[in-house]
Amino acid sequence: MTYHLDPRMPAAEACIQRSMLERWASVQPDKVFAVFADGSTWTYAQTLDVTIRTANALRALGVKQGERVMVWLPTSADCLRVWFGLNYLGAVFVPLNLAYRGNLLQHALKLSEARLGIVHGDLHQRLGDIDRGQLQTIVVLGGEGQPVEGLKVLPDSSLQSTDARAPELEREIAPWDLQSIIFTSGTTGPSKGVLSSYVHLHEMAKAAPFLDGDDRYLITLPMFHSGGVMPVTAMLIHGGSIAIVESFSTENFWPTIRRAQITTVILLGVMGSFLLKRPPSDDDRNHTLRTCTYVPLNDTAPQFHERFGTDIHTHFNMTEISMPIVSQANPTALGSAGRPRDGVQVRLVDANDCEVPVGTVGEMVVRTDCPWAMNHGYAGNAEATAAAWRNGWFHTGDGFRMDAEGNFFFVDRLKDAIRRRGENISSFEVESEVLAYPAIREAAAVAVKSEVAEDEVMAIVALKEGEAFDPADLIEFLRPRMAHFMIPRYVRVVDGLPRTPTAKIEKVKLREEGLTADTWDREKAGITIKREKVGVKNA
Image (cartoon, rainbow, N blue to C red; front, side):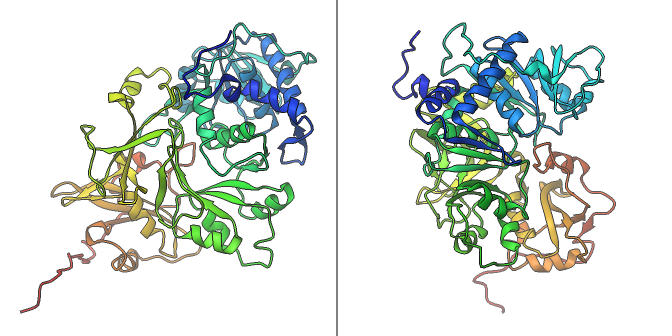
């Protein structure tokens, strides 16, 4: 069967994983596709072979085209072959965060509608005391499978097959078929399962303009995260290669880059800062890392480029969309996420979806020229789907502003924004300045209700080991760096900030906790912050 595609949509063989694997295994069978942490490798031919064998084992377990299968595995060769094997059958990859347990796990399983799960041996006992939805059978990999009441537990041999013949499909896989369900971080509420087609993942992965078939992408983010599956798909599109490590490590980063001949990587949050804090070395430019995706583009980005000689790029993305904002190499507009790429339309709008003026903060809404190039809803959540896709645009929930040159600047998650005495405050900007204080390791800024009206700003901070800290000193540090209305009234010191399973700060929990007994109050300490008078001479 041949599909008649919209001319703006990639051809089926260009965006469907099965077709891409078969093509590269034919064109360049001996080229290495994957390098693993233990030093082992798969060529393209080997990758196709292990994918087909895994697909046949899944087929023997009854997996059908279009069926959703829960995958609960660390980033590894096993996770890669199960993902590829499922998509080779036209089945749906539903990876779960390794930190899930209890109600979070129960929620995700219900939304997954999975009958079968592929689960690591260290995790499967968490399935024992929860409502597992439709889950009936699990295959346990990487450990001994112990009985779980009410579940059929199969050994890892169930996912091995000697059959190397490509399984036949009930029908040709279509570009708009459901490829995966990846769960959001859940920073503002329960995690949502994002429905992603083959076109969606393809368009997200190919959006980075600097990648080609000579690249080797270091995969540091988990495959239950879009930042893990996207780079793998990008290299599959270009015929490049990947190297998989369990997680980011400051100490091991450059040795891994050199040993595995890495050419590109994503550095999120403080990763780049951690690398810059290591002592300078004569080997700082003795490496293969040509490009780096640096998010956010803060003042450490040009330092990274200058010290290590790596070209810096940045972007804005989320699980639901397909990287609509990208930059050119070494952008100079610090704080920017870039500009809209070809094939997407981006607007900043108010609460009524009316476009806001340049320089004004509005919610970013997105749509694409290519059909199916973004998510097509949330699993089991029609209400959230309708709300996000209202008026024909996908609403990101993120506040941005655009400058006169067309650069887009992230301001805050709309639900995290703070309003104090008529001023809108970005928690992101408050946190950036608080984190500049030498004693502070991590920080979050949240709104707490004012006894007068609107909000007050509270900073919750965790300190570096062995550091002394006086909140009053922090306030004095911030005075020359921030607008008066942004300076926190409240400061609370904690051992560590609560985080979601995808390591994002759980601000909803901090807001719920509010003012605790150990919260320091600037006003009670007698410290007042006044608006600086401009243009008024003393009498």
